[in-house]
Image 1 (cartoon, one colour):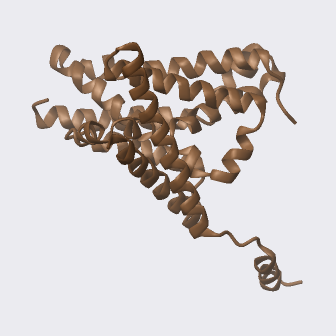
Image 2: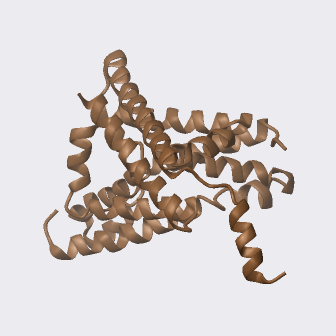
Image 3: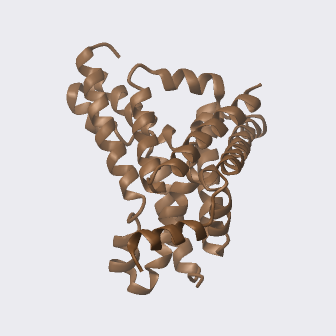
Length: 146
Length: 116
């Protein structure tokens, strides 16, 4: 069978993605996450009488903990395949990638398994974040004034 | 009102990410990296600070906030130490997130068994 013919048949049987539906689901899921984040911050501010900055840090800690726990229990992957970017873009996606790569490599031992593979997927975020932050910070510093 | 703004802003960012994911061949890893760089870029003239003031928690949850706080911490230290402050203050604000991720995922990995 020629390649072109094969490609045609493969294209025909490919599962067609519903792009509009995906977008709406991602928008709603991301929106709910943002809503919950703001709600958590306001609850902390009102209950414990702490400043907005401190309570936002507590909010991030809580979200990371929930994402790690759900990944460890095994059903966060299913949620990610369903909601896609609604869960990848918030900080939960970062926590999920760290947690899943460290879980996967548990069998290789403590040092060469968990220790060295923990940032296999999430390392790119940190590397590009720091490099770009350095470049942009330098530009801002050279322009002058803070 | 901040609750509604959070809903709209966080949803909009996720929608943009989903559109990029669907229409190009980029993987989720690419997209999170792009958004971190975008957040760092928006903080050059403190645009993201203004967004956080208006939107609140919805702007601090997406990964763009990570890039924003990297630049913000770095710039805050330059006023005290000069150029070298860029390196000193880089992790000032993001240290909590990274340390919490490392500690929690390490402890949970020790306790839990990987599924399938």
